[in-house]
Length: 96
Image (cartoon, rainbow, N blue to C red; front, top):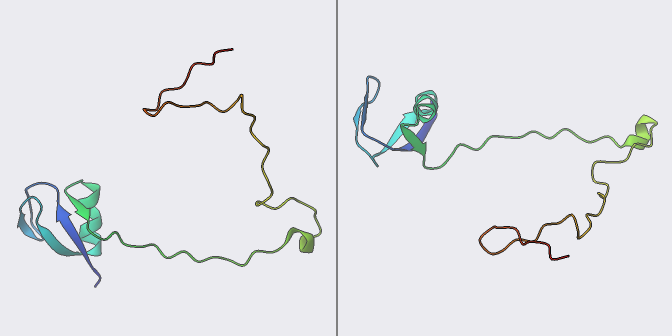
């Protein structure tokens, strides 16, 4: 059984773990922790890391096509299309 460490966001009582105080750290089984996170009663201290399996990539040329790869360069954006921002996030007015 995998235990996940969480911290309570608020005071609550659960039949599986009992009474919990705000900011209390507790170790829970994974399924119980996920359920309480969905209810927004607790937050993960160290969120569980999902394992990603990568499949080997096959080149487009070996498939008989000359399709561009996903890493090909994108079109350049002109300066006129790019909005300049003030420090606080507001857009500058174009003085043309």
